[in-house]
Length: 111
View (tube, rainbow, N blue to C red):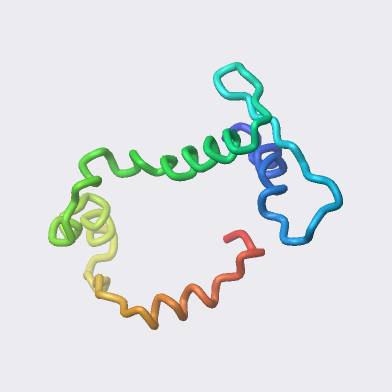
């Protein structure tokens, strides 16, 4: 999947289309050397992949990290060290700020 992103994207775009099609597309997926066309299995494999793709980013120790420990995480230390004098500050965001930021995202534009 990582070697050819365009091929991968073309494989799952039928799931993303909003316009109805006259005929259904059957997606075939090779899972451990066996080609499957059972769409519920294909969907489950995509779900498993996308739900677990970032599981080990930052190491396994981040799975149980508390909010207090977030400030001691290596990535925060790196950001702080690179921006001396330190004008960078983490702060809590409220729901309205998050919603406003999400509304500004253009889902049709890759960033």
